[in-house]
Image (cartoon, rainbow, N blue to C red):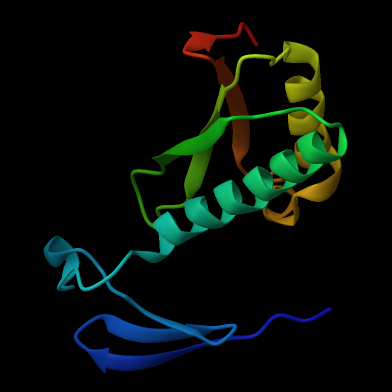
Length: 143
């Protein structure tokens, strides 16, 4: 399997990105010379991590016949102070809502994503400390 992406310089630090036929603009923040015309690359890395693990988790839970009414995930990253300002730590928080949810299938789905299926996490994990939290119906589970 091979992935391909393309970016074309527009102006300043703004680039037109093309990925799988979808076009969007990426840019830098004004304080570093950008114009804020689109998301920044490090933020897109977080979105990629979230998208990868979220798709895994929902797919696994579906196969387990677990009924999730609402689901979302967030990522918070700590970056190095000096260049290269790489990711040092990322915390993913999974939010589940549903009337018949039990904790064990949720933990299992997340573990399978983290340990086996999510290629983005597998790429980042050797150098970035990635942790997670689980919130079910507004209640934080102890991890």
